[in-house]
Length: 323
Length: 268
Image (cartoon, rainbow over all chains, first blue to last red; front, side, top):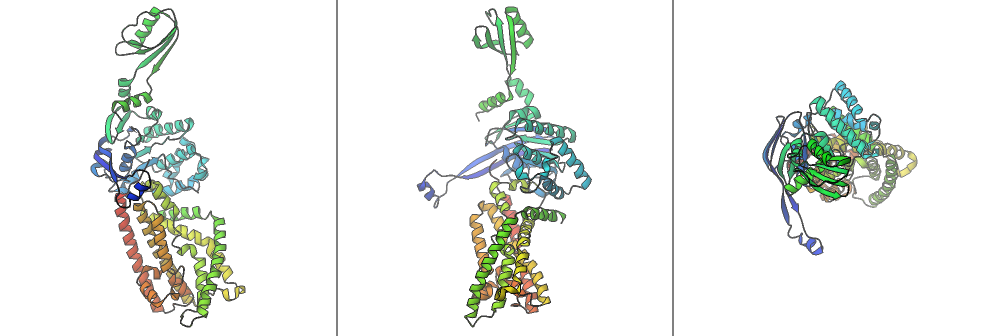
């Protein structure tokens, strides 16, 4: 179980304006700005949960991940992750966690990936049979059988990422932090990674915390999302609830005939001759009734129903909270 | 222990790949070796106050060239600096290992790998009699050979514990440039990397005996060539080596723990 309570972290950032004069000034006086990266962050995540941690760039996502994985010490606040305080008992605590930083590499650059795995086996003191079993499983799920014989530097980003992810799961961690694991991947690799995460979460009951900008990741993987902006938690809830709150349906209709008046629950978005786009408010008018209404008025040639994408929801959330 | 062996093996494998660099290194080492020998033997042959003979200096210089990568202060693990500047350090921090020990082993492996590729050819060629007055001698006695091996080990550990402090300071400074240049220049000069310590003025030699620099390459090389031969003195020297190792490692670990609390992994 993961429990964070009132975590606060500030960074001191040095800044100056451009130019010689200002550069020279810094010899005598340095200007700092104190930036609050995290401001009273609290949340609780249960075992086996899969949580999407989202927010715009610079919101504090990575800082939170770094604190939870024991790398950073917060200014104040408490944390209890499976009985440990991450930054105080780092070496004991990290045995049970796995971390993937999408924009960094944890594999050895010049040797085949398999050698890196071998080293991890020694680092985590994994018994031979357990290691072989887990490795075989990961290799199969992520389809990296041949890839792990190649030195890391010669792998494509997608291949390397799959290996990085396998490396984080070798020791069967109870909690895994994935910091933008699909950054820069193509569609095929993305789907492979998502399928893998889903499967391992289900089979091994691994708790997974995922930060991402990819809304499809969120939709495919998580039920619960935590939205963070400017260092504060703005929202912590189910994705389906959010969808209900923000979701709208759009009907695009091609037809013969004339629509005179729309009934309650339908509003024009676009209006052309023979083609309209309508917004449907399902709270007033269920979809079935809306279609029945339309068929009674016109001869429908083609009908398309669109939902709001998670992308739109996220944009709306950012707008609503002014971040 | 198995973990550190694994790290050693990994770093060694990683490093042994750069064979062309090693070949080029050997050529450079020979060029410098001949130059130094000509320079220092001219000095010795034209003065009457020196206690070290030109034969001893020739052997000293070739040993220095053979073990150049082991005792060069600037030869440190670039990957460690990179991991600090790029933030890849984050990954190492999520592993259940003591970072100080791991870096120590990594640097050790790196130096052994680099030395292994260079030392043997230099040894073989320099021992050939056809080099004339440039020929390197064998250890002056069997006992000297044994003392040489023992003090080599302690000298290496001592140097590594000094280099560790460079890494640790870099964690707070982020850019390794200034720290590395300052520390390696001081180290290289005062450990006899540029001018052998026996050729330095007496007063400098006396002062250096109170620093760790005196006890690095100066000791094994000068035991090998017979410049230091008193057994009692050698035992005392080993004691001082151990003393400095304990001090530097304790300081390094303390500093590391301190900077780890304040470490900020930037970006991402």
